[in-house]
Image 1 (cartoon, rainbow, N blue to C red):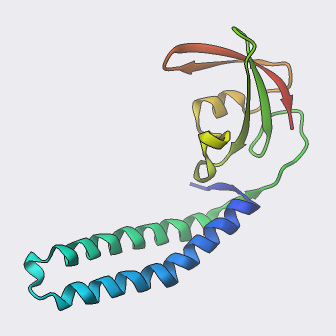
Image 2 (image 1 turned 180 degrees about the vertical axis):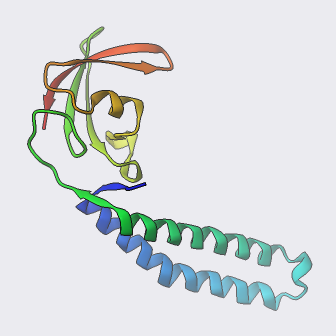
Length: 152
């Protein structure tokens, strides 16, 4: 699957990968050397933990390498329809509250900062819609209707 990223997130992931390959691997190696120095590996919790940490680190490195190799970079752009990179202001039809979301790829999603994945239910409902359109989104509390107030 191709990951869609902004230039900023791509650079952030490149930096994370470099840190994991250098500092992260060094820390794991140091942990393994220390754990081995404690003796019997069959009953050595420090060694088992270091091996588990090593497996997690290598999984993350592998995932990042795949993402960076296959990523499609998107830039903010002006369009009249919602797409990845768009910032959308929504007005809830029932009480007129406003919500603003930026549509991003899955790796970049951060709902606390208003970045939602285009794979999410809200993201899927918004994709391709235009200013003034109404979208219905199924939430745990039921169906919520929003009107698209603006797209940047």
